Image (cartoon, rainbow, N blue to C red; front, side):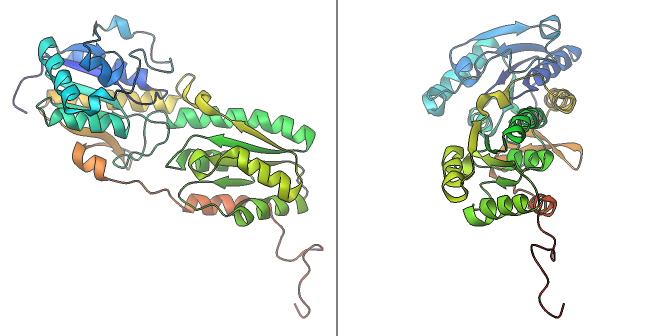
Length: 339
């Protein structure tokens, strides 16, 4: 990229994630430190089409580091999915004199960034999604905060489940990826975890773990379900029918997206926001900032979108090893004759 960067736009798009504000703050303040003006685009790609913007100063992003959500708002735009909508967005960039865009979000956000990059607008993406499912990055902004929110909620649920000797089925987000469910399941000592990457088998994944836990003295059970692995209400009904347990279902829903970002998300968002502006300032564009082996890396957008992230199934092995189960030989499971 040969053109000097004098003014950039920053937007947040797709599902909100804790830490987005920290990323916006880092983009704005890093830009100012390099004598680059920064324009905040409200409501994502829709805002770029409709020229919904605000000129941002360092003071405007004061005290947003600890806030959840996004001060720039976020929205999905069907119009932006069309070439006509994308051309309108490019026209807005020309009207506002934007030399580049920093887009904060997930896969959908980056597909939009790729579209306008092909129409001549330089872009840099920052991965922010609680699902942690961006292939080019080991970590995405918002994942740690969402995990902590789920853990705190489940810890509270466990108190009442234990008091009433019940089974709790908790549905967490993760339509296509089980990173959140598996991470949370290990962290709360779940009886069982269901994820999209491992086709659920009710007998193997739910019935047997509950039976083992009961035989070893447990009177309450915690089942964590990623939304893409099955509906919690259906699983709760099956547990009631097959095991006779009082199964109570909780869908955490959008509470997972809210709340103050964790230290990890604040620090990571700040580093990624800084790196995005530095890439543009140094002439690099049309890439996604990600993490790999602890370091920040830049991946071309097309390559980033083609990459898939597979879940670390050894985490599932950890979960199974830590489940409460009968020892190989016990009064309830005696050794065969001759052993």
